[in-house]
Image (cartoon, rainbow, N blue to C red):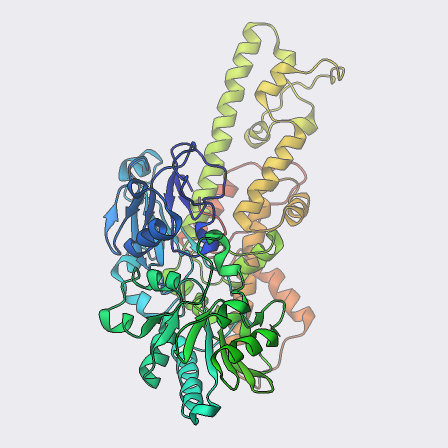
Length: 580
């Protein structure tokens, strides 16, 4: 927001002057990049980590002069970014993956009235949050930032899979046991992986079992670019699998490796890497492809196939983190291993960062987005954002009033004062706030638009749409919900937002009380809970702190619109879903 940076957005409408950032080399993030990048308007430099830069040039053919590698921890002020700075920190996802940290220039912050408090944003890209991040100096400097754009791939309580180390140990143990069998009984081991990623599993299998892992030529070229040590690279051996060269790089991670390619493999590596869909389809549930297993086993003279499919989608609350699907001599292990954060890890990360707002990057629709934001509302620190939001509303009202005053003066000088007046129901918001009552005039015929009136105020429909969009952004609710909130609040954005924050605060308090209550304590009756809620609302949150007092004074210093009630005071710390 408020900058020229575009993160992982190479398929989007290209804006001139954009500064592009690529968080890592996975197809759903670099999609849209190709060897023609730079020929069209809005296609400029691409900032990424050195590992990602090498892969972009090797695999996609992007011009060398357009790729700007930035090592982890270094700070850069990209040309064309208007003084904003960029810094990368490890995302613990795949080789070269990074979180991007953005900082507003001091001069720009001062011009916005934020002297000494520049805007700061964190974009996680794809991330597996871990405790090590809590000690990263760069991330610690961004605690309390304006917003975190969070990788919400698994942002639901049901996604609670084991730590990576536990899943890696399981995979290595299963393969080790299989390769201990007599030669005639050993299966061919196939490990599913993306173009990059899962290397930790592969290296542990190689070390534990003392074997080399067979890869095709393309993957071997990739492995040479991802900063593996000489010893680690030695655990892989290139084999000719008869796979076609070229192809659609952009969709490679989603493409199936043809079973026939395994039949033309030359080499005797007992463990081989295949694409994620080789052993079957994983959505909406795993559907094994036993014919591929038959062909692969026959090609190398193995008795069967031992498949390893590591992904977070394999977690099943009823069946556990590790499951096996078998057919004859074939066995496919569904391992809950992910390079994305589990729900608990996401909450730990947000609790550490304490952002003023949280922006999901993975969601199905606006309703899903709102649900995700709600799951973290107790962890964000939105006090500052609420103050800025309310301050912005105050400035907007003052500016609108100034424009109206100016227009009235002009109208009086031209003896057109009647054209400036508006019916009571159509009075501009600024006039209602100030308590002014211009003389109403009859509405003109539909064929004669009131040009002077249009210069003073938005139409009722436009104003409602604007207020609805603003409420959606601030409260993280759907358009339908925002419209209902506005109707209930008599059209007042401030009152609707205030009630929303109060409700969130009360919900958080209720959750905290239940969490701290003894196991044997009885729940209060619905009537009692309702009574307590009414009491808290009427009391304005009890003894308010400085933050609460400032918010309360903002509302109490302004005359109420006719027919509405004074909104309750919002307790500091309630949820906000959009940076100011």
